[in-house]
Amino acid sequence: MSILVFVETDEGKVKKSSLEAVSYAAAMGDEVIALAFGTVDSAELAATGKNGANKVLHVSDSKLDQGNIQAYATGIAAAMESTGSSILVLAKSSLGDPVSARVAIKVGASLASNVTSLPDTSDGFKVTRSIYTGKAFANVSLNGDKKIIAIKKNAVDLKEDGGDAAVEAFSPEIPDSDFGVTITSQEKATGDVLLPEADIVVSGGRGLKGPENWGMIEELAKLLGAATGCSKPVSDVGWRPHHEHVGQTGVKVSPTLYVAVGISGAIQHLAGVNSSKVIVVINKDAEAPFFKAADYGIAGDAFEVVPKLIEALKSAN
Amino acid sequence: MNILVCITHVPDTTSKIAFTDNNTKFDKNGVQFIIGPYDDYALARAVELKEASGGKITVLNVGEAETEPTIRKALAIGADEAIRVNAFPSDSFFVANQIAAIAKEGNYDLILMGRESIDFNGGQVHGMVGEMLGIPSLSPVMSLDIDGTKAKISREIEGGKEYIELDLPFVAGCQEPIAEWKIPNMRGIMSARTKPLNVVEPSDNTVQSEVQNFELPPAKGAVKMVDAENVGELVNLLKNEAKVI
Image (cartoon, rainbow over the protein chains, first blue to last red):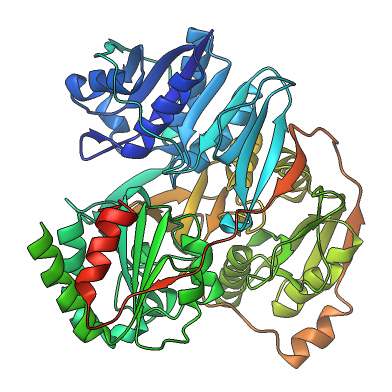
C-alpha cells in the first residue's frame, strides 16, 4: 500500500508545507510517493526523499507551471489510480483546498481538512482537525476505502533524515476541458518568506499610524527571518496588501513565534493567530486585550520599543 | 443572469466556543448566528452584479429550521428567493451533494459561496460542487467581473494574486475584497418577509465523515510582561526560555 502526497512548488522550490505533508505521510509507515506539477528541477524533487518520499512522480508539462485547479485534480486522481494509493496527503492551502475537493469527488474519497494529528487506526480511521478558526478541535472518523488528508500548516514536525528519492516522469491524460480557465497574469511578492508558511511572523496594526512607518516592521522581520503580516483595518485602508491580512477572514498563521506590534487584539485577529506557539505583544495600551492571549508583552510605544528591539537583536546575534 | 448564492448559518465571529453533551454538541447557549462572513461577501457581490445588469438571485442554505432568520436576512440584503434543504449540514460532501442537486434543476449562470465556512473551515464545498457539475471552480476569489458570458476574476495565491479569465457557468468561493458587506435597509427587511422561501428535503443522505467528539485547546498561561526600558530582556527570554529565535 502506498500513500500519495501532492507537492506544491513556489519559485522552483518545494513548499515547506508540502515537505510537512511528505513527513506526515512517512510517519504513517507506508511507501510514500510524491507528485509534483510543472517545471521544477529534478534534484529539488529528489530532495523530498530527505523528508520521507520513496519516489517522486513528476508531471513536467510547462502548461502546468501555474496552479490549474482542474488539471491538477485530474493528474492527482490518475496518480492515485496508477499507483494504487488509497490515501492522498497534502497541505491545506489556497491551492490545496480547491484541488483536493475535486479529487475527492473524482475518486470517491472522504476528506478531512485542517488535520493536526496522525490517523488513529485502532478503531476505524480517525483524525483530529482544527475547527472554529483554531478555537476548537474535532475528532473525526472517515468512512470509505479512500481518504484525503489536508494537513494544517506548521502542525507537523519535518522529518529530515532520509536520502534522495527517485524521480520518474508521469504523464496523465488531461482533457482540454480542464484548460478552460486561463490564468492571464500573476502578481506576487518574490523572494520573501510566504506568510502562511512562515516560522516567525511580525505583524503591525493601526498603532503604527501609517504605511510609511512599516520600515521598522520590515527590518525587524528581516532580522528574524520572518514574514510580515498586518491586522484587518490596516489592509482595509490599503496600508498593506490583502495577502498580509492575518485574522478570522484573512490568513490564519501558526508560526513558532508571532510578534504583534500596535495591534489591540480583536477576537477576529486572535482567531488567525491562536495556534501560534509563542506570542509577543507590543502595545502602548497596557489594557489591550491582546496581552491576555500573549506569552510575552511589552507595554510601550512601538516607535520606541521596536528600534530598541532591533538593536538588542543585532547585538545578541 | 441567474445567480445561486450558498450561505452558511454560523456562530458570530466573537462567539465563545463551548461544547455540551460530553463534548459531542456545540453549545448554542448565548451564541448569535450570522450569515458566514465569506458567504456574506459572495451575496454582496451577487447583489452588485444584479444591480448592474439585472437577473435573479436565489439563496440556498443546507440547514434545519433554526437557520430561517439567517436566510431571511439574505433575502433582506437583496436575494429574490430562497431554498432551504431541510437537513443538518453533516459534512462537506453532504452539503455539496445538496447544492449540486439544486443547481442541476436551476440552470444557474454563476454559483457563489464563501471560500470556507467559519465553523468547520473545510473550504471544500465549492470544489466538490464544481466537480459534481463538471464546471470550473475557483477559490479564494477576490474580485469578479462579468461581461456577457465571460468572467474576469482574481484569485488569491500565497504571497499575491493571479488574474483569470473564463466562461460562465462556474463556481466561486469568495473572500474580501470582492465587495463590501451590505446592511439590509428597512424596505429590504419588509420585503424579505414575503419573498418565497422553499423548503426541500435532502436528495441524498450520504456522509463521508462523522464527528466523534470535540476538544478545546489547552488554556494559555499568564503573560510575562517585560519593561519597555529593558527590551534586551525580551530577546533573552525568546532565546533562552521560549527557545524560538
